Length: 471
Image (cartoon, rainbow, N blue to C red):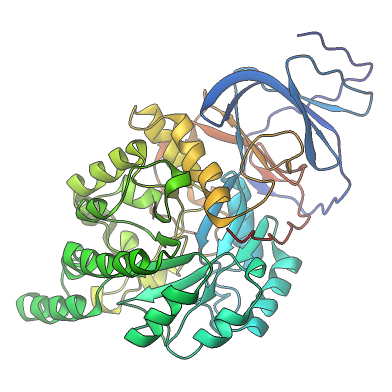
């Protein structure tokens, strides 16, 4: 490639995890030179120019000005920034566990550049006023781009349907199991919601009757302090399938755009199509944790891998991985849900469900690639492209000229040991702790700004509010 510059501005690597306090908002011109780009089903070598926060050129022959910062990316992989459409940043109301600043720092360290936060905070995001409150919080704290889901309840459907649909990502529905008052179990309300939503509905599907019956049964057998692996039996395949089948039947009846959250069983795959994304109005998500762990890991990890729906069998895990390549599963998102370690390390029935994972989700998926289980193109499809397409996120999720420069550079020859002092989660633990990944997140750009560089959050400028197209 022909490249000349009168001034050498080369970013050099460092290795330790640190957080800097710079809040630089100036747009810098970057040339990422000779990267292996993964985008829209192709893997190819090219260079990429970032100017004024957007991608302005992709080619093999880009000339730089004196002010251009050149990044030598030979042998490294450049991906669109990950869009994680399922996070619980706990802000407001539970900021002793996490908040938008701490978790967005963990996000950029993991190559995540945009997030969609769930409504089950305190207070729950079920009105326009509470949605606006969360937007304000994120605008002051978040290093990544941000959007929110609105929560459905038995009592708020009319207000929910009146809100401008471009202001939120989707309607979050707890169907069959929930905490607080977010369980929607009124059949008339469900019919109205699916019939009139005019917006993507994202559902957590587990049947409460099955869960309650299983709980009573296993308490009789094992008492009040069973092994944590009981979680997979209490929140079992039948609990998931019964609820998912009901939701999909409603979506089919009314032609509703519907997204099944955190799929966990082989059986549920029967409900899903492997048609091309453009032809689907029913789509599905899986978490990296359900692709990584199985019920055999409860012996070592205990309640640390307790989540809803539960981690299930190796057969389920392998079927979910296969379904990614087949196209039955459309997105990978974390369900990042931090809790204090003290809340996890209790007897089973007192423990809480959820785990932090956003700092390591891309690394987990890349490890599956290194193991030959998924293609790197599939990872980009499921973590970047499809997220943007399904949720209507404009000008992000792809490496295209004119798009926002949300990018992540991967060193595929380096390793990342997951050590406690490298964790940026406020809760300071992770179920993946102790594992060494065979890739490294080298750089993360958000809106053209280099936010994370070689183990350091170097820029704490704020991300942008996402707008959602009505599809």
